[in-house]
Amino acid sequence: MLDGTIHPDYADVASTLIRQIPRDRHGGSAVCVYHRGRSVVDIWGGAKNGAGEPWARDTTAPSFSTTKGVLSTLLHILVDRGKAGYDDPIAAHWTAFGCRGKERITIRQALCHEAGLYRITDLVSSPRELLDWDHMKARIADAEPVHAPGDGQGYHALTYGWLIGGLIEEIDGRPLQRVLAEELVDPLGLDGAFIGMPHNELYRRAELVHGVSRPGSEKPEWQATLRAWVGGGLAALGVDIDEFDAALNPFTEAFDWNDEAVVQAVIPAANGQFTARSLARVYAMLAGGGELDGVRVLSEERVREIARVRNRGRDRVLLIPMHWRMGYHRVFTLGASAPLAFGHYGYGGSGAFCDPSRELAVALTTNSGSGTPMGNSNVPRIARAAIRAVDRLRR
Image (tube, rainbow, N blue to C red):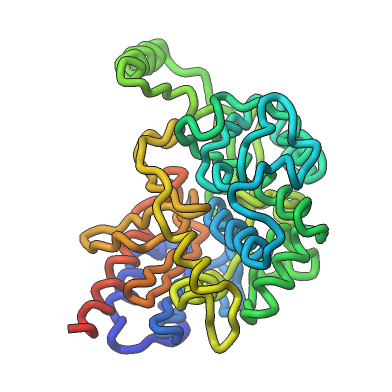
């Protein structure tokens, strides 16, 4: 069922992936694992589209919020070059951003989801607006935060892309896609990493099995009553469940993530197209203290800084503590402890992370998953298998 290569010590990773690939050939996945800077797992299987075309070595998959980790890495590269500082106000680099109470929001606060700009429903009336990069940059620059900078954290599920991506362009002067190509793709030899996929690369992409986001249907009276009852109870604890919808649900009409126009648009919090191999190499670089295959992308000091947990409180949108680093969250695993690991998972089941303490990097891409904004159990299960394999080798 699987193609690719795998070191025998990591056989459980392959077994885990086999159990995740749909047996009806309505979906596929790929996994890549690096340990101590060396590829030990590079496997794939299943189907990349409804026609049943097999997943190939160069197949890219839409990876939703997994894209945020790659985007954050680009900003860290610019900071490491001395082009900006984490405690700089964003407005010092992006003049149009300095309005409506955003004058003092810092780069650090934005990276840690503390800027209070997560309400996408305040910014758009139609999901088609998400396709217009310049329009959405202007909307986030003109937005008003829902809380004071640094007063808690709320997951910027969609707005993070225009906030951080727009800032990258303002700091650097190059288009975001060029920064990605010149600062990560070329130095690390990534074989498939796109935010806004070029037309001539579309043949490589996997299509999502569940690719359409639809407006929420009108709920039966009992469901509305239950939601109101649960919401009232949570409100007494300081939790507002409406913030979840405000951050994640601008879909007033059907929105097809498989549409070519959507795949080619620049939506940096949600529509990255990656091979698992490319994601794993980015995180292998981080696991290696900023260096991979003799190429230094970040200083060791910078990697240590971005790995530190910045907040541990309950997230206003996701309702659980995410232990945000600067652009990355805690790594969720099933039955394996990795307190020093960090990365980013995405809706649909994709995800990538590194554990510097183990010199480990893991990435999963898939087109058949669903679940929460932080994915489902797929990456945690793959993570468990990889971590246990490394720990056996260390005994």
